[in-house]
Amino acid sequence: MARARCDAAALLLLASVLFPLAAVATIVTIPSAPAAAAPEDTRCRATPPRRGALAVYPSDMEQLQFLLNAKFVEAEWFLHAALGRGVDYLDRNLSAGGPRPSGARKASLDFRTTEVAAELGYQEVGHIRYSYQYEMIVHHRAIRQAVGGFPRPAIDLGADRFAMVMDDAMGVRLDPPFDPYNSTVNFLLASYIFPHVTAAATMSISSSLMGFVSKRLQSSILAVEAGQDAVIRLLLYQHADEAVPPYQGHTVADFTRRISEWRNRMSGCGAKDEGVKVLDRQQGAERRTISNILGAGEDSLGFQRTPAEVLRILYGSRNEQIPGGFLPRGANGTIARGFFQLA
Image (cartoon, rainbow, N blue to C red; front, side, top):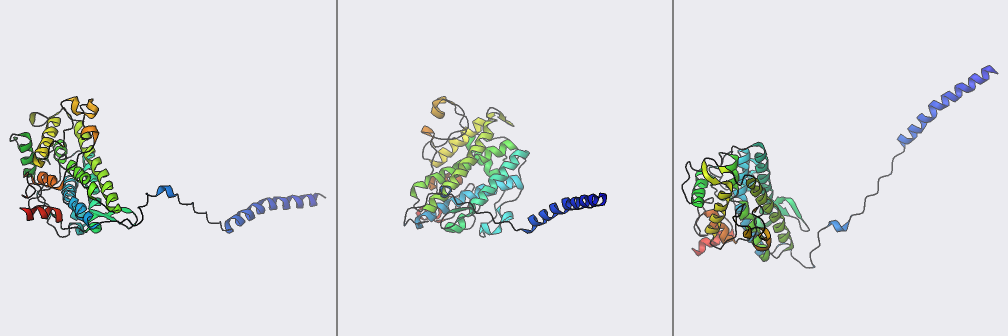
């Protein structure tokens, strides 16, 4: 009887060990059914274009193409200042054989500003490479592939070029000459020149675009350009009341105001620009602020600049038919070259 009880206990113990193992083996060997795919939410798609709408009209192409001139200037400026190298280092094909920029070099920047400058430069490269598919914009492709590009224009980013702009803007020959690569503040003041121009140019073409893909491309670029302008302006506003060494008596806010006035003067089309700090609250948002981080006009609506205005500023000549400044041989593309034919 005792032996039988021992045998039964042994069998019970063996079963308690084997049964869980068998269960585990069963679980492992039974293939799991594939999870059902979640149904696509159609509300996540962009509103489809109307029936028969065209993606890109021929007239759209030259408008979008024109933006490449400013895009190349910005990309080379930000990348060289942050990294000491430009567009060709990332993708030699984007320049389409155009000459390398002259005078560009790495700037003496603090760590955070270096990060910001590199990011803005990479964004410009993304815009240059922007493209589209038939149904939607693909943000990492290229304008050049989408609308037909052109070789990178000759670009002058030399310190002496910026010094000439600053002397003209300030109305006095600065001593020592302004060097955009010398410090973080100088770099930000020099950077202040560009994003506003590109954002205003991008906004101005909106009314002339007809293709639904063209409009999406324009609005996507404008969103980033406006953000870049705001970032530069905010970084400068944080130092608005500080003097710009070694130019005692001239604050950061003073420099931005003078640069904005210079752009207005070059464009010749009225006041479409203001510094990061206004002198009178009547010029601020709803006539209540002196801060002016998001440069805008009446009712806080963004400024627009025509291609002719953009070229007058980038050339620094007040004339879209006379190249110079940051584009010493002139801009490329149908619109820019068309002004030469009118000369």
